[in-house]
Image (tube, rainbow, N blue to C red; front, side):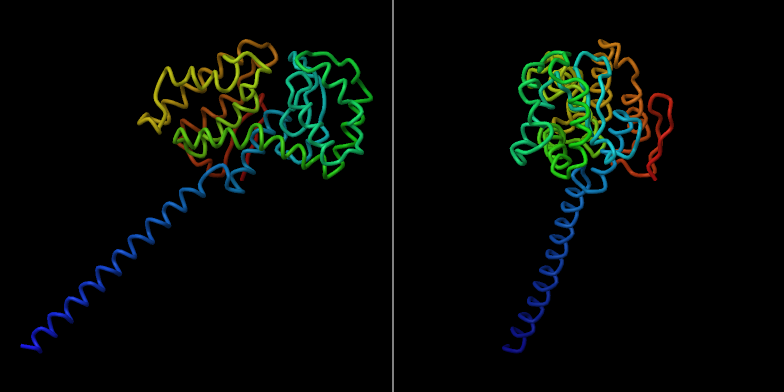
Length: 277
């Protein structure tokens, strides 16, 4: 009798061990899958690099976004100077915020003297107090790692991080996260620098009236198609943005089902071909 009980206990132990191992294996697998999913986002180093290059092709007609810290010109879009790696504008407040941040970290810099003028022209297309001297100072400052880091900081704080965060909350893929980020860069985060309906939040609200986000049970491709349609309408309001190349490139990736921005990527921007291998 004792031997039989002992035998049953032995088999019970084996069964418990097998179940335990199986449960552990399932747990590890599920954890691994969650971890992989978290990594496949625009926050991934390689994906973020792709995002920077895609935006640079639209903003600077170049994939070498690190070469654009010194870029500055007035593209006649009513926003004054456009400059730097994502097109900070003297008329929309982000250029002012950038120079303030740079000066906070490094008070002795070439651009600090222009802060009063940047305050004055904010909200307009004016160059008053800026001009060629400001352009020269910008290009000189761009050689400073501190100014480059300030541009990276403002890009991430105002545009990249909020865009990716909202996209993740909406259940969007890496491509969807990029589409949101690019929308943030071009249309603004809804801080009052442009009319709300023409800003990123306004475009998103218009898209939400058309369809649900994946987080709400909607189809991502349908939702993002609507979002891009609404962006195209807003871009059509300005002559300087009548070329919809950046929208069409995103539509191309969406139609191809490249939801994770897998390379190689090929697209055209203003008629010029680009490729990320």
